[in-house]
Amino acid sequence: MGRFHLSISNNKRESFIPSVSKVSSATALSRVLGLVREQVMAYYFGAGMATDAFVTAFRIPNILRDMFAEGALSQSFIPIFKKKLVSDTEKEAFNLASIIITFIFIVVGLIVILGVLAAPAIIYITANGFTADPEKFSLTVSLTRIMFFYLLTVSLAALVMGILNSFNRFGIPALSSSMFNLGMILSVICLYNYLEVPIYAMAIGVIIGGLGQVFIQVPSLRKIGYKFKPVFNFLHEDFKKVMKLFMPMIIGLSASRVNILISTLLASFLVEGSISYLSYSYRLMHFPMGVFAVALGTVALPKISELVSNNDTESLSRSFAEAFNLNIFILIPSGIFLALFGKEIVQLIFQWGEFSYSATDNTYLALLHYSYGLIGFGTVRVVVPFYYAFNDSKLPMKFSLITVLVNIILYYPLIQVLNFAGLAAATSLAGLLNCILLIYFLPRKGIDISFSKLWLYIFKIIIAASIAFYSAKMIPSFVSFENVILNRVANLIIPGIEALLIYILICFLLRIRELNKYLNYFKK
Image (cartoon, rainbow, N blue to C red; front, side, top):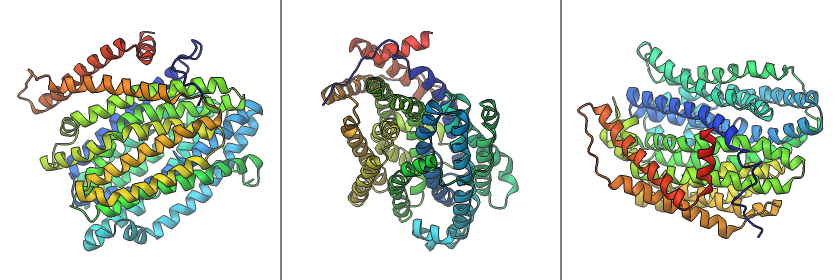
């Protein structure tokens, strides 16, 4: 294999960090609001029947969102759209955007209608365990019908985000998901006491938040000169190119989302609250992944698509090295932090109101087994755009199918040992396998990777992060407050700061260059 460039030239050294920092900051705000949203749900509804019904009902439109919005459609659109901007005119690129938006209105609109009509059958298949409780089953069906309309708004929001990102406008699009979380938070607070079935406030908030995601981006869209008008030219050559990328992506994503559906189905037969424990813990795991890995992948796709258009393989290799190293530098310590301090995190964020001590223990158990999957999930978000930039969505699709099979095989034995947490463990192990396959085959695209240096870098970060966070865990706390909130904050923040300082020191001693990149950027 070729060389894995751990260093990059000065003119490329901060090619990702400035843009990533903008997206990460906006995404961090969204994730914080997302945690507040989860806090609100935990406080008002706990981890019982209503929460299980909502989480299950939202899962189907959320899975379809990954395909038609933030997943397959937007990622197949961006490389083609960016190449049109580089090689042709804005007018032609905007024409392609209008074709795709028209396609969304027609196809996604039909899916929404079908979803509303077929909701009982969908829940019967995906959460068959709910049929034993007619009230729970009926509530889940009603919530599903309401939230299916979210699929249309979020699909439009994601495509608009892709257009703006292609113009190197990342801030406002990244903020759009904050509107979704705000919509849900305000809906619950304002409507909880006025609805006969309070959990409907969450579903109404989903629709309000989805509309907010679209409208916050409209002014930025106008600034770049884009105005939508329906274009029904589905025989256009560029539309065909997008669809050629889209179809393998949607198969791959569909396969991976089968895991989620099977996980939900199996959890519906386990102890009540299992679906909620897995959902809350997944949200916590997704926080560092969303703040950094997703942000890095968002910034990377339009940039590397441009490099591919210019046939600049040397810069692509440097870009991969930078993206991979920056990603690992953050995700490994994040995963170890979740594993060691997960219970304190769950207590601080969720253990209020109807959320019990046993719910905290069970949520932490699921989080523990999601924590080691964080590295795989996050790195996949960074590596896959390199395939998409080369208009290759078939290989990621094949790897996705393989990992789905592995995941399904792992479910049964791990459930026997770990109960509901076995579902999280199986998902994490399959995610790591997917990550390894994607990286191993990337040199076929002409990107130089030295796997010996790659593994050495990972080993250094694991050592640095393990020493830092285990040391902080072992240091006794001398701070105590009578106030419960202050005490929980102190139990998390103080060791967190200690671990961060130790991690920085060890990285400095090991001469981890990514530390200097971050420090130099923040100094500016």
